[in-house]
View (spheres, rainbow, N blue to C red):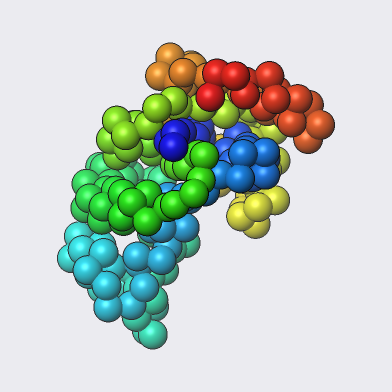
Length: 194
């Protein structure tokens, strides 16, 4: 069973690449963002760790994490973003490793993680696929997906690694800047590599 990391900045199309690969290879997809969301439920050690670093006003009155407030905070301040990563990576990485150990009868596991290298998850991957797109396209996708303004989307992207960084660290690069059919064709072309 192969473990493939899929990474890239926001709006590049990591989730779409994973969806296509999942269909083609009957792969198991582990979405790091979904793992973080699940771990941040009320009363968890993960959420308690976030609250201890960012204060009780980072949660709603019902005890749920105010994701929008946290996102705004970390995209405004590099130190706070690093602090969040330090206090949460261990929880996320441990959970992902547990999920990998439970997977049976799959040819491939895909780890969809924007911070694959920062978290150290790349070390358990056989290959790393980097998904890239033009910034204008990413901004459009982020605005549509998250319901945010272009200005906020640009700010989020400026806080993330550049396409040049991802091109250097990845084993396989997919440029997702055209149609869905084009993307599927590019994925077919890299099948032998993975």
